Image 1 (cartoon, rainbow over the protein chains, first blue to last red):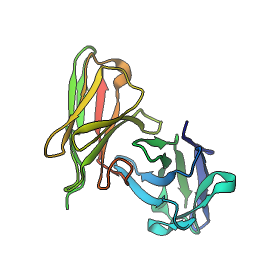
Image 2: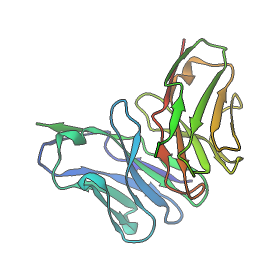
Image 3: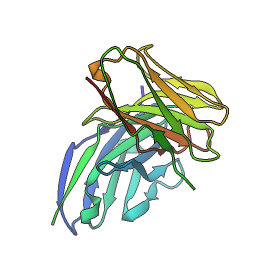
Image 4: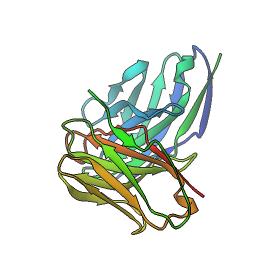
Length: 112
Length: 113
C-alpha cells in the first residue's frame, strides 16, 4: 500500500525564521510526490512536485523540497517564513495509477 | 483561463436525501477526480474519471456514484445521505491523464442535518 505520513500536525515559527514541514512516504517504488497548501476558505494550491528528475525541487513562494530515497522523505522547507505562509499544508503521493494519497496535513502558524 | 469550477458552493440537506454536485474542469483537461475532506482531515479519494470512463474508485460505499460527460464535466451523486457525509467535496482536473498534476476547485461544502 502507498501512503504518506506527515510527522507534525502543528508547526509554529516566528516570522523570518526557517520553516520545516516533514513528510515520509511509503511505497514499493519511487512515487510522484507533491506539496499542496490550503488557505482558509480557499482551494488547494500546488506548491511543488517531484517526478523523479532532480531530487531538490523548487516551488512557488520560496518553498522547496528534497526527495531522499534512503530516508523515504520529502520534507518541505522555506528559508524565511512570512505571515502569508500561515495555512494547512498537505504532502501527497501518487503512483502510476490513478490515485492521490493525502497526508493528514500540517497546520503552520507564523508568529509576528 | 478559468480554473476548476464547482457548484453549488454550499448545500444543506437532511438525512436520507440525495445530492448532486457538479464540476467543470480546466479547459483541455480530460481527467476529473473527486475527494471528500472531512473537517480537520486530509482529502480522501472517491473517484477518478478519464475520457468519460471510471479509472479509479476509493473506499466509499455504493451510495456514492459519479459520471463524466462528453464535455469532460462531472457529477458526483450521493444517495441516502448520512450525517457523516457532511464534508467539503473537492473536484480536481488534470491535463496529462490520471497521474498528472491535479488542479483543485474551491469545493462544495455539504452539511447533512
